[in-house]
Structure formats: structure tokens, C-alpha cells
Image (cartoon, rainbow, N blue to C red; front, side):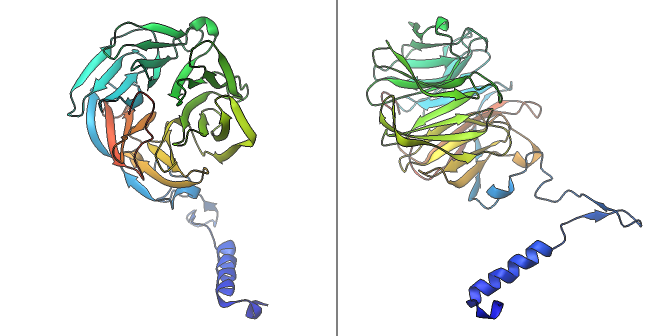
Length: 348
């Protein structure tokens, strides 16, 4: 029957048959003929790239700025309107500002916020999503651009564990609720109205909702589900209204764990992979198109890649991580993505 196929199809069929009958790479015991599993180059790393992602366009970021000799859990990098890079450290609650010429200052000192996400509002104030004690003291606050005048936006009494947030063009914002487990999905994505008076569930019943981002047109909302390993894509017809048949899970991640995310002006979505020292990039419909590895990935270094920011006036991608268990230290890494970062209201 092969002779009736077009030549290309016949060749493909032969190749497939050969692949199906080929003997996998094994190592045999000395003389008894019993086969044994063997580590190959593609799986020897502590964090091997999943087979489905090994052929993606892959680049390696470079070390760009050392934040601390301590392995601080960095999170939430965003640009403000002046091109400063703002970010936090979770367990000390601090908020930092790094100037374009790489001068670092502390805007908010040590506190009990459990700071995890940042956004800049239309009013220029910095909004901080805080996990608190990871149980019952999570809240969202805002501070002036110099870090003073802290005000509560979503109180702890509301019962959320806010992890990340993003503003829309109307002045409201979405935030993720970092609650639940892989078998008890009680977290979700919520929307806070521009006047702060209403909090509306948009995507409930998630197993630890983590990252949240809006596409450049403001009509696509993305979210990651940390404990279920899923990427969610929502087509929005209003701040709290999902279009008919507008929800999808275009990707299921392999291994732990999808963390925070950002989008670029081409509609691509960049997802930090916590525990994997890399960032996965998806196109506008959720198909993976590239990845960025951190230095030392194959040796299990800088695994706590929690978040990233993309410069709004260029293609530079800034990824935060630490090397707990290695040489130590908390770093910002730099690479170049496909397009410039989506500009956020009030910020960069």
C-alpha cells in the first residue's frame, strides 16, 4: 500500500514505523540480559525540559543586577511611569525601586504585608498585593510614589490572600486569590471596581490562583493556576463579563508550577515557572512559542523564578529569582522577548 501514497507521505509512514519499533535507550546489566533505565543527556538535569517543550525557541538570560547576597524571595516587578523597576520581597514585605541607571532604594521597609504583587494606578500610587501570614491577614494596600501614606484598599477582613494584580483602562483592577489546594479549589480571580466599592468574582474555584495579566487590547484576561498547573484565557465583554464560550484552558503545564505573568504588545504571554528557572512564552491563543532559561538551569540553580517585567519601550525582559541552596543571592536577569511590554495604566 505504501506505493500508492505520495512520496512524502510514504517517507513519513516509514519513519513513524521505525520510531514505534525502535528500542529505547537502555543500559543492560552485565550478563543476565535484564534491561535497566539509564539517564540520558536530556533528562539528567534536576529540572529537565519536558519533551513537548524541548524544541521551542530557547534563549538564556544573563545576570543583570544582584539585589542581595541573601536568597530573598523576589516578586512582582513592574515599571513606573519614569522607567524605574519596582519589585518586592515576599517574606520581609519590602518594596524596592531600581532606577534606570541601577541605583537601588527601599520604598517600603520591612513589614507584615507578605508583599507578592505590584501595580501602579492612574493616580500614580503603588498598589501592593499582600499575602500576609498566608492564612487570614492578606490584604491590598496602596502607597504614595515615595512609599509613604499607606492606605488599605482591600482589607484582611474581606477574606482573600491577594497575590498579583493588574489595572484595566477603566481604573479598576483584577487580583488573584492565592487560596486552596490541588483538590480544594477555593481561590480565584476577582475584579475591584474603580471606586473600590465592589469586588466581583470573575473566575472562581481555582487551585491557588497566582498570575494575572491583560492583553494589549484589554479584552483578553489571562491567569495561572499554581496548584493545578493550568493557563486560563478569558475573552471579556466588560470588566466582569466573560464572553459566551469565552473561557478556555489552552495549556496544561508539566511540573511545578506556573507563577506570575506579563504580556507584550503582540499579545504574547510570558509565564514564570516557579521551581524551573525559566519563563515560557505563549502566543495570543495560548500555544507555546518560546522559552527563556536562567543561567545554571541545568544544574538546578535559581529555581525560584517567580515573576518578570517587560520594558514598555523595548523588548527587554527582566526576571526575578534567587539561588537558595546554591551560591545564594537574589538576582534580576535580563533577556529580550518578542515585543515591547504592554503598557499599564499609571505605570510602564
